[in-house]
Image (cartoon, rainbow, N blue to C red; front, side, top):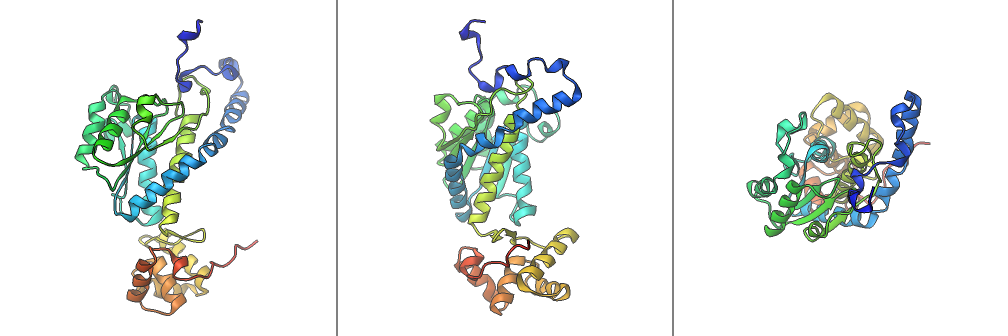
Length: 308
């Protein structure tokens, strides 16, 4: 094959290590996939500085009461929606804070919407519909780096004053890089099955999005040490977790933790400050607000050490 016949997108190239996979046993297939997956974390780690910049932007946006928008098509769009949907139960934030947008809308989450990714005007329209502005951060996700829907969204987001990023697993064209304040490009190489970016590219994308939201949430005070404390005890599982956290951090019994949560409006972070400083709910909330929501700026003590 002449060199100019090769697709310039790494995600679309054939993987020489899996060229005979159709003749492999089930165990050999598992081993081949596992061997390819081992390189994904290193590819993501190579983007540490770009990831840190994205975390900083997301933190600033959250502190401005802006929004983080993920936008993509196919697997990329589904991963954005997934990460956004996990933020409210994990960090106790409103669903509007982090939003996932997928080409083709909600039906595309479970059934491919052919052609939806090819319309840049639809991506731009989503930015207008959501009134994206200077306090927002728009992260375009396109494994191949060439999705027109994502390009349209990034271009309009920039026009509207938002900060932007591109997440891709092959170097995006220069025209796309010009639209992004941050480019996060973990190169994971050709897929086990050619072009199946739900595999290594999808795994890398999931790791990237996890890092952006988790990092930003930590920075705005959603954890105490590594404990997930900014949650509301709104169901049985979360009530149990909340009571266990208060027992560990504050040294109270289950019954005492339950009563403390009641006085704190079922907010774990508020309850910790109330107990540690012996103040009422209003005072605890005022002190947290004055410290940007970060418990360690109100209570300098570290959480109890992790049991061996």
